[in-house]
Length: 405
Image 1 (cartoon, rainbow, N blue to C red):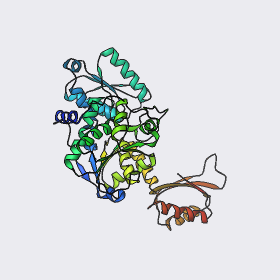
Image 2: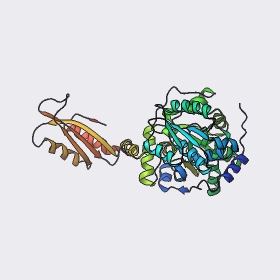
Image 3: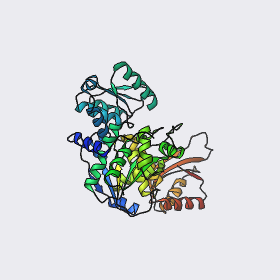
Image 4: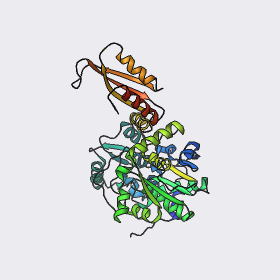
């Protein structure tokens, strides 16, 4: 076991350093999420933080504490999104050089946002690991200080300031939920919360396709996954930090997993019912609360909405995916006779179930088509999964053979 040198005093000192740099983000009571979770739910809206996520807290706390000599040389980091923007903003605020290495496939919006904070951005490699290797090589050449994303005492202490605000805003909270990637955020808040209110419960949430902490806890040591696959790119981490693993193991009450369907559905609920734009990482924490992955209690619960930096084009796909997971959208593909009136018969059958048709595609040509038949693709809006079942049952009774996507 390593020595956990971070204390509540370190986190309080970080809060002082962040005054005037970070926003004191709202802790908002959500009626809709409370209904779904059967407990009072409050959202800590770090999606409204400067740069769109909590990452600025740890980045500024780390960079501000560097020696004058190190600040003059500058800082370097590797990131595909939020950490990049947090480091770039902090460096700009302190007027020091900053170099960020991002994967070549990073969303243009995130690349431009990072550049807008004054950083030099290099696009390198197809994935984060390749970008990280390149950043480490550049660090050795330039002498810049490497700013890690999570496994660092100053980074962890900075992220822990979220917890200080939460308890100031709602002292009678009984549990706090946060997503886990590398573990910086949940480590910081766990140290702070357990020091100030030992009775409080702390729950971490991972994407099931990137559950490196769950695997590490099961193995009893830090474990590296062979691969990760999740729509929540902010927590798509193969290996937790050595320091963050120890904090989680000692202070976090439980770690649960949610799948991509649940994450997408939570993003839609947040957007539609809470009027909140959330990225997949923070929606994972919400998903755990509204899908009963946590112990059934009536605790007053704060969910940290860690960020809102989601690409608009990706968001549109997630909305469709989330609606589909919730039974609110479906795409039917079937074949009908290529005769006048055949399409009308199909559409009448759909209309009689009360389903709303969004779009129709009608194809006569294709390698799988037979003469005298056409393929029809219907995109429909539905009330819920039971209405999809009603429509499917009706089409089956009428002799239609179809697939749903």
